[in-house]
Amino acid sequence: MSTAVLEPSVATGPFPFTAEQKEFLSGFMAGVAQRGIHPYVGATATGQLTGDPAQGGANLAEETIYGTPLADVTKQERWKHEEHPLDGWDRILAHAEAGKLPDEENTFRFRNFGMFHVSPAQNSFMLRCRIPAGELTALQMRGLADIADDYGNGKSAVTTRSNLQIREIAPANLVNVITRLQSLGLTARGSGVDNIRNITASPTAGFDPRELLDTRPFAHSLHHYILNHREFYNLPRKFNVAFEGGGAVDTVADTNDIGFMAVKLAAEAKGDSLKDATSVALPAGIYFRVELCGITGHKQLAKDSGILVKPTEALAVCAAMIRVFLENGDRTDRKKARLKYLIDKWGVEKFLAETQKKLAFPLVKFPLEQCIKRPAAVKHGHIGVYRQKQAEKNYIGVVVPVGVLTTKQMRRIADLAANYGSGALRLTPWQNVLIPDVPDGFVETVKRQLVRLGLHHEATNILGGLVACTGNTGCKWAATDTKGQAVALGAHLNKKLQLDHPINIHLTGCPNSCAQHYVGDIGLQGVKVGQASSEGYHVVFGGGTGADAAIGKQVFTGIPFSDLPVLLERVLKTYQAKHQPGETFAAFTRRHEVKQLQEMFSE
Image (cartoon, rainbow, N blue to C red; front, side):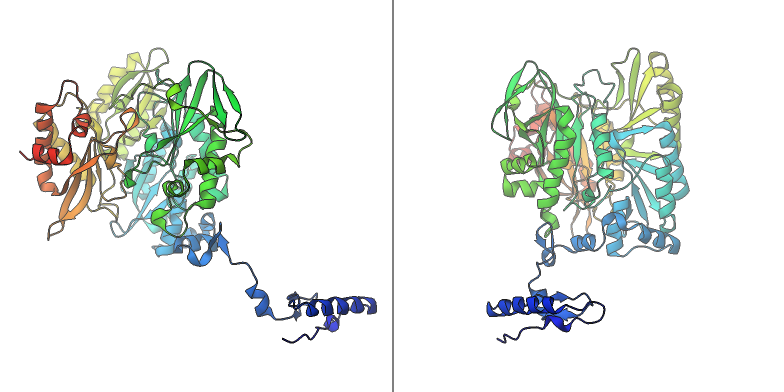
């Protein structure tokens, strides 16, 4: 290897070296060469290169995304690395101006702004809003109806995250829709792809006589925290958070990546600090338990993490946990990029330890068994008329078949809320709407108005629990027309039998399980069956959430939809004939093995 010393005096022009500087640098470079060290590689003040640029490049650190080499990440991660997800507004402007549909990359990017190109199901866009805690005003509901009429298909759909979607939006109207939504005080930012989705809270929060805690402030605080932190728009995969206050209507918090569950301590107790292993005094009062890793499409409900959190600490704990996921989640395989897989790899204790490093206060371990047990939610408590904790006030749960509302219905519901309530509305994860704050004297009037509108305030034990995803009329992943078939199935069963106990029937069009079929009493996953690829369903029994939490078990495979109504009629009639006194359908199916159920329901 040559030991020739580079002459530092090559610099010329306005930056000459003095004789003393030349002597010093020559001696320094000679010493470097004698030790076999490559000369410094870089640019002089005049921009001239010294040494071998290729050698310097070889010594540069490999480019990574949170420690994962750029060469190993998915294409979606590379797209995000090349341009931050929130920096795509000019792309949307250009597509709207040209009336142009997006390619694969821009389809991904536009979802960061809540605009979903849903080809081939529909060659148009779907808007998914962000409505924290499901809270809307009458004015906002009317404004959303205007957007649906002016730019969509004249309908909206209530989702299982207490949210609203509007479909059939042309590319030319992308900007109009987003700006109109913002003028209503709403946003769609981060409602898709690798972001924290709409933050849910107890649907009856603030007026539920049973609640331990009004969870709306927590949902709104986290919502605004997300909107104001750019790093939260670059997660490895989507992330769901819910706040459950212990009210009558289930928030389905155990299907979320993080679920904050309000609990009560009747007396002062002591917990264990994860920060320094000391004992921590816990005064009597209301706290949150933290559940982790609900992902029902992967057959997993969230599990208690063992920690107890003061309500004032909940936002910081949530943000710290999200940051741990942000920095350590898998960016090489989108199928393994959810929080569940990080905790499967690490274990809960390591995840909590990493969370603790990001907090100034201690996480506190405390046994779940020492918290007062919460009463079970009221099944179908989202339907009907119920007393509020406010004197002489009521909330009315409106039946919205599979979540679909026409714009006429949207405006009339808004009118009812404004004229007979407080102007407030709530969307629920059960795909319906609540009208709160209705005085006793106006309840019957509102009920009559709902009937005239083609809606109802009461439902049978079958129709009150129908949940369905979008289906193949609007989603490329779905194998079946879930919404249309849910309505037909519900009508058939409602005509053929009456049940003593309410049941939930969830129809989802694909394994992604947006309708959470594994937690339904009856869960149906859409599939193509037979040589003709007709629409059918795998059939799951025995799921549940909250106090009745369970993942259902698949009993039948690939049943054509044409056969399904009669099969489920037989299933429910068999249950009626053979169940024990007071036994629910879920409990009945759980105490039998799959083979027993197959034989029993095939007779």
